[in-house]
Length: 503
Image (cartoon, rainbow, N blue to C red; front, side, top):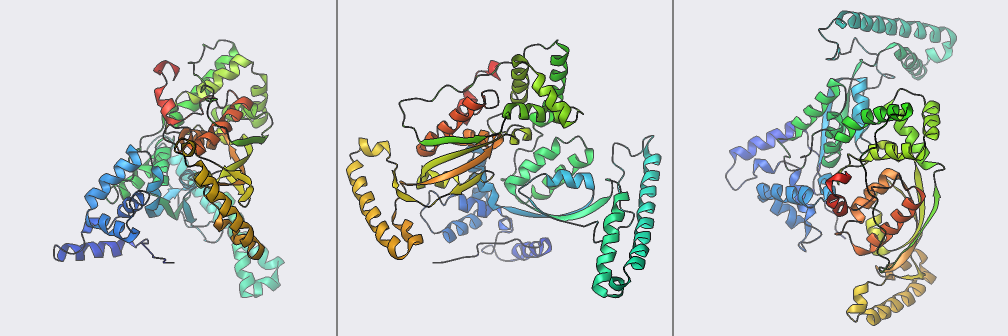
């Protein structure tokens, strides 16, 4: 076994010092351009098809950064292997943004954040006047409000502190207890502060998450949040130009909520025009083998739940009002809203987050090869049993065509014999003896949005056949349960071939 630390984050000032040294050194020294995480992404992208040791791949990428960048662009954006960008990681110091902007940024769930706490730090007069208000007729009243909030915060802190000192003298006399009481006073006093209060945080995002965050921030209605996205992009563009490319706001985020609101109002007024049509994916080819896939649980009234969430997110209605509206829609109106929510999808964009509310749970029996791909769907809940020979093996159809089925059966038989022997002395190690064709039972729980992602990748014509068969049956059963919600769950290739009239 060999474990090599391939790289790690460096402080910005240290990188600048290294770059100066590289520029002053002879030509054979380090290329300053190599001080980028792009080389790691490029090297790791080659692992699947290049047999050389990883250190050699990294060395080659460092020596030819221009080639590494071309490789990244081709693999990430040409072939669509966006997970390669996750190997590049960026740390950000973020200061002087409002609590609202912090929330917008931290909606990127796969980032890491450590934030200045309003519970542990006594705040000064830290706040912004947002661009929408600054220099306008509400500027002065807003600043007055900020002053009131901040003055009230200070007074509240002092009064709470005095109260705690009086009511809990024993704790106040102890150093640790006093710190706790001071923290309690800050924690409650902060309720006076507004969401324009500024904070600071350290944020860590990989390039893939960063690109998604920039796109989402670009679609935000707040100018401050849009500026935050622009500044994040500007910070990394000179360092890693090959990893963050698609940064324009999603039409689905910008246009869909308003379009849904308008359509709902028209439907409820009885004056809606038909929504643009769409077409569900055709039935699976029944000549192909099927996998063991069983939908064992799903959200009750899943489509109504989703419709209510769409209404809730595009109107000012409460949840009860939204759910009642969804329940009151007839079949035509329901279909119209679902089509409206999906018609701006592209092959690379997920549906709205409202699609995360309905859940579906499957029991699967998958080969080791299939599971290796299934487990990459990290937003799903995956509970796997141990591999078991009595579940059989998955046999590639090419083995029959190539006359390998008998040989494969013999290898599997010997593997299983050894499996049983190992199990007697080291049960947990027995699976080492099994093949990639041996199977395990898996519980796979995902929301509808993640199933769309699975369909895009695993139903595509380029997907590996084993997981494509499993995914096809999963989506078939999901569509049988929720025909409207899952109408556009299909592979990227089929999505791209749809006639424009169906979009």
